[in-house]
Length: 407
View (tube, rainbow, N blue to C red):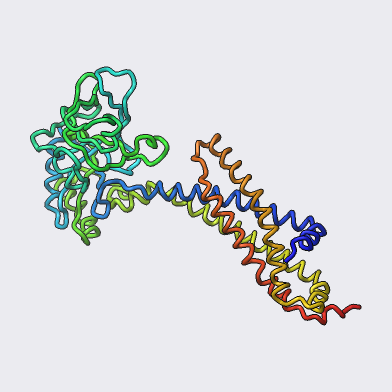
């Protein structure tokens, strides 16, 4: 098929051609960047925490009406929880991954170092922590029971030993084995790295911890204060039962406590859902926007092509009378739409890259992958061809007798 007659016809419909081309360009620019953002959000909320979330339960506990030494209360509660049917193990800590609150600090490799070598989340742990969480050691060993000590609230941790994540070990000692080396949690007292775990995510999921989300440090302390987080490892299929019986067992042991009703007893599946609720909501909203834009663009192509077919029925009839086949008419409209789409796609590629560069400078986003642009361009061209097919098929069915009407 010759392109010149098609281009000549498009010059007589400049407004409609420009409108559809511009609509395709804007759709491509917005959809490519939106899908790129969705992919980043999905990757963010799908990040592994490093723990066996399916079998973990968190109970937030606060003792009331009791002052002074909370260590016996903590020990009694842990003993109670470990004897609850369906509970494999339990420990107490200051925070847990994805919880949104906890401790962070800078680590140094020298005493009183100016500026930290790496930032890290701090988790209070004992010899039950790794088995409870299901965290895997890749080097070294776990804490021993005789290495765990009590630490009052508002004190600064100065641990003799620490267990760190593999990501943090690589940050601290990128050219060698971190096991057995020293790190400064406190400015003037070294801590020996006795173990390295595969992964343990920080409590925060936002921008605050974006640079050290996989940097975590376990310190061998029991935090002695009136509030704590109990983490329970639950047998398969027993989560519902333990969620009901564990708080009852705690109240039966000592009623002078408060366990919040709303989020005091939460499986880690609920903690993850809460932590990433905004990312999930944003991804869904952007996906809906993409679908709506694509639907509007397809509807615009269908509407414009249908309008042109209605205007050209006599011309189509003349062509049919002169020997044009139904395939020729169908090919004509498909080619015409393809040319409009290619023009819109070329403009859209420039707009997509420009929009991404603006977002990179204003919102510190990542650069848009060209694969998204190319895939979006191909998808929009296919969408345009699919949208125009029905009107083009109707045009191909115009009989030659249309050429003699209204003459």
